[in-house]
Image 1 (cartoon, helix red, strand yellow):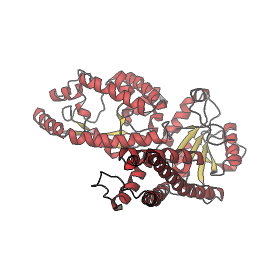
Image 2 (cartoon, rainbow, N blue to C red):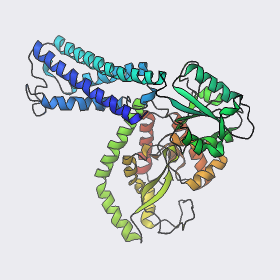
Image 3 (cartoon, rainbow, N blue to C red):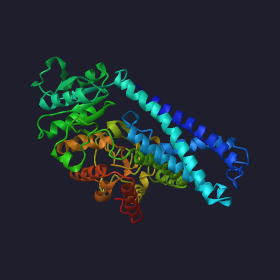
Length: 468
């Protein structure tokens, strides 16, 4: 089972559907009225020469389909999701093709103009959905026959763990329970032979049984510390993580029923954003970070000279941070401190830190030192909006008092977020925990509108020079 190959299959079928639709639509228009398509846009599509349009239309369709989120979480799509996604993207493609490129049907008849629009929409929806449904049925058949399965591991051996296992075996054929993992020496599970080991052996268990998903099912709702430490342990593996909800998650709506008959679960690795918004967010990250790098290139050159003339050392500063899924990456910044300021010992900075260079103080005041991180965003290591990434040393410190820090691993860290706006530079662990709480609130309320508000607040901070 390969998610990438399924995505490629969706894209190929969508391209095939768009080619069939455009060919049929060209024939329809020429047969009915023999009107030149895209009249007035002769550079793109000359009269009666549709070769260019056959190249442009499929790519445009795939682009809109991508923004609809259809290529995310392909194994978890339902038929309802397919219908809604195909309807919305087909409608958007049809309307933009007609009104954005100004097809010339109105000169003949408005009735014919809208009839042509309806024909294009109907054909696009029909053929696209038919091909997608073929893939969907193949996926369902593979799960039904157990050709494909999601190897699942349950963390816990108590009554809650057994209940989850029974629900899955009865109502979710796409999952295969490979066994249980004990969190301590005490084991209540009636199927003792299915207990594969304890948490200290988790890496070998996941590798041996090719685990794709884990469910943390503890009996003691009050054992919050154990829950978050287990989640933090699991994040370094490329697997889905869920846990059985407590009253809090149920009340705030985090607990989701993925399949009728199964107890609700809270996903740790799936973003709370709808797929279409997640796709749009990543698209905007790519476009805006690329444009920023190009438009701000004079700023790069200017401050490169300023930093070099101000103090000895490199222009850029690279530092290891923890990003999405708990993976490390090198964050890129303009150097604002004298070289060797830490000497291997992590130390938080403050507004009056004497390690900051004169130029560095100005860079921090207007957040100019963060500009190189557009490169991290372009690479997919960060996003425009998201919790600020921290060093492992400080994450360990934070988790001593706030073990739920690991929840932030489900989303990309960002250039700015609600936490940094409210708290600013965090020069103490207490401030970092306070900032974390704002970031948790952001994570639970992620949306494109929320991101837009945060970006507006960030620009206000930058223009007022409140960076430090």
